[in-house]
Amino acid sequence: QLQVQESGPGLVKPSETLSLTCIVSGGSITTENYFWGWIRQPPGKGLEWIGSMYHSGSKYYNPSLRSRVTISGETSKNHVSLNLTSVTAADTAVYHCVRQIGLGSWAFDYWGQGFLVTVSS
Amino acid sequence: QSALTQPASVSGSPGQSITIPCTGTSSDVGSYNLVSWYQQHPGKARKLMIYEVNKRPSGVSNRFSGSKSGNTASLTISGLQAEDEADYYCCSYVGSVTLVFGGGTRLTVL
Image (cartoon, rainbow over all chains, first blue to last red; front, side):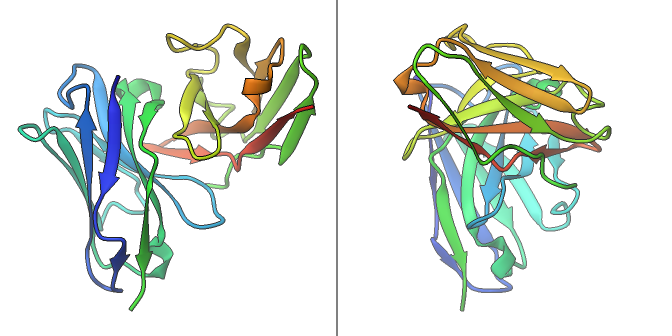
């Protein structure tokens, strides 16, 4: 059974870079036709798709975050990483690692439990 | 993009059928057959129940079905069971490589 677990610093200072890792077990991030990405949910607000990547290198980002976000895969470790630069309090959220069923479906069949990141000095 | 509109809560008795609407616009739900639905039990990860409007992933009960009419997508649960009590979220592709989610609906099984 595929399992997904997010990890990283729970507290980040404003203007710094938020870095999270998604550890995937029970399956490979290189499985054909599946993308990996991140979705976040600020406290009391709705879900927001951040971006997705394919193991071959294709990457797709939310236009509203594109200038600050990088998603990358470490195939040797079966990890997916998220970097979000120049964070502000508005980036405080629960961040979920997700697996996407191909690019065309825009559906996510595995979700991590989520990891709360607070941006505060 | 504005969030998709879902009722905050719905309820039904065991054995009944309920429908959760998800209302968008002609730019999202109305334009693309790329609506998905997710179930979340307290303290658990979200689970994909329906994708591409009406497709069920392997392992999802056929009591769950999806449909779309105009700018509104719907999730129908038939033969309601106690285990169906959860939060449900809809999601739609909106073009330009981005998505919009609904605010979620709390389903209570009476």
